[in-house]
Image 1 (tube, helix red, strand yellow):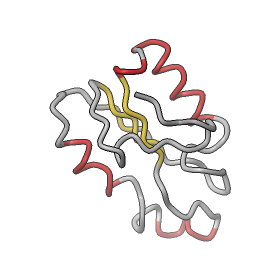
Image 2 (tube, rainbow, N blue to C red; image 1 turned 180 degrees about the vertical axis):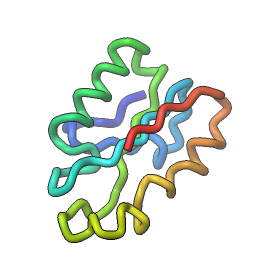
Image 3 (cartoon, helix red, strand yellow; image 1 turned 45 degrees about the horizontal axis):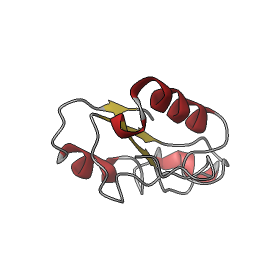
Length: 98
């Protein structure tokens, strides 16, 4: 199931979606939404195209994506907060992209 309505935000793990493949994506600095505007949406669309919408759960990382926040390298609000939720999914395969 895809909840990436605008192409810039995805919340499948937050919404409890469980799929054979889970993509957790942290956008680049200063990019909008939780998926950014270039790499994240394109990667999500490619995975959905190859695996089908029900085969992929897409989660963008909600964090401060500023140049200044790069100094802590994602330790506050980074992708780690989604790993427990994704790991509790009944499917064994995972894909983590940072």
